[in-house]
Image 1 (cartoon, rainbow, N blue to C red):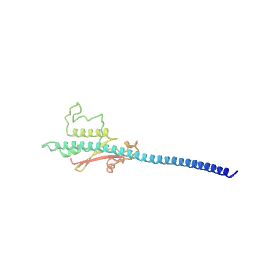
Image 2: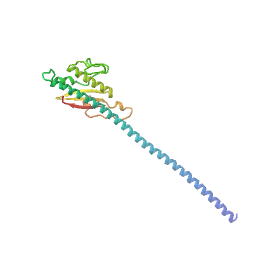
Image 3: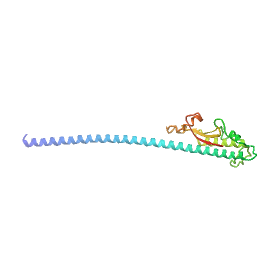
Image 4: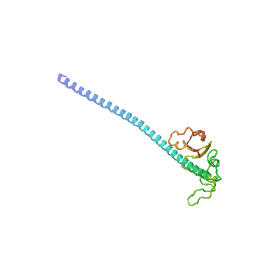
Length: 212
């Protein structure tokens, strides 16, 4: 083999080695791109999980806010009825005094009610049914029943309690804060003052104090 042939052979081998090296580098770079895609997918997945968690927390918080608003509305409505009943104690020579007002509305424990069984005397217009002629005790019973029904219909396991503390009446509207969040996997949101009244650490509440 002369010098020219050796030179051609060397060039051929050099070109072959160069092509093999380029092919190796190209294959190696393809592997790096795949790893980068996997890492990107992982980072994106973690980010989406975080967004989903925030969304669930937002829904849970908004739901609890709705329950609190409804409970506040029920408590304020009952408070306005008690204040209206108080006006009858101011009638001169009337047979209704302040002590009977408090005793008629304040009950021990939660108010029991059946939405399908109203009191014997409907003291307010109910649809086409005219209001009955109610005495002081009948009005208190009817007001308690309506508040209790409203809580049971608009709140999860909703209940109403009226607690007499000295010259004040505490209106407590409570509900199960945990039951509506089981499907969301969220933790309960509870007012720390509720457990001593309801006896249940899973129940949230709204407490409204009035001086009748």
